[in-house]
Image 1 (cartoon, rainbow, N blue to C red):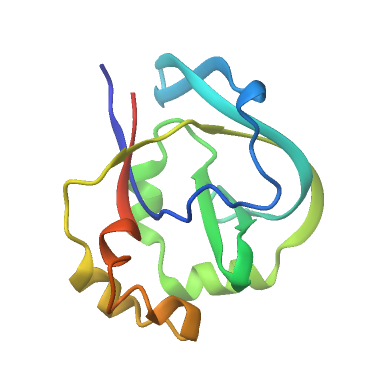
Image 2: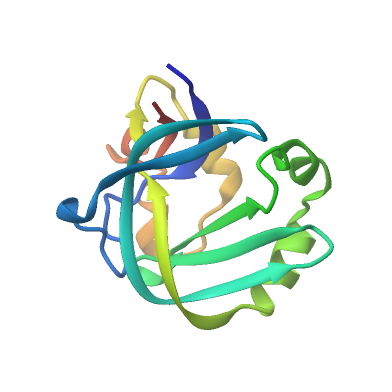
Length: 154
């Protein structure tokens, strides 16, 4: 089993547009320049905000959720480009890239994820400092353990 860890906010699958179970198919997922594994991939087609950053050699995609929340997916163009991308990516670069996104018809395929709920992310969430009232309830209620997760692809 190969694992690729991605930190992200779990938003109960309410992305817009939604990913339907019937559109899940096994496809190649590259874990390195010469290595791939077949994993279940979720598919949908819609107008997504996207941007290709030429210097970073990475693509940005915005996945929207209710209440004004969104998930930014940043993917290196090279199969072995993640370490280089992580080394140079800053919040300022992400914000500038988000300002350059444009709506484009996109066929999106993302790995189906398994949730690892064994970690307590309360402290991390407090540093995120949610500004919306609907998000601050996660800090002080039963929702904290259901908010942030570590995703793994297997």
